[in-house]
Length: 83
Image (cartoon, rainbow, N blue to C red; front, side, top):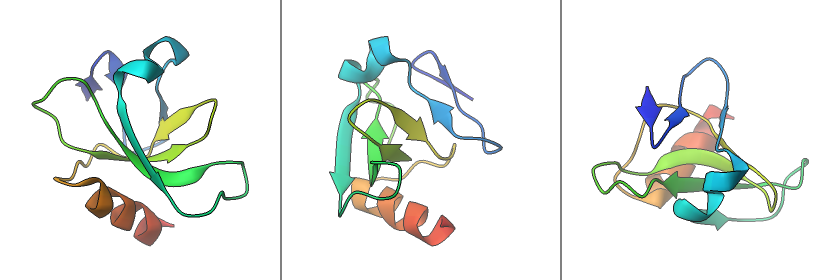
């Protein structure tokens, strides 16, 4: 699945290229976890897309799934349940 020039798949997390990080809307919540990241969600600049569950750090964002959700809270809930 291609979203804003980022290939998403359900086999491995998909990284948003550093040059595109500023384009995506980010939502993160909770304490920092082991690798200096937080659970979160991202929304691409294309308004046709919803929120994708993601691990968000100051330096990188990894999208966890091709599943998208209508709110960032629902995306984070999915990510927490997925472990």
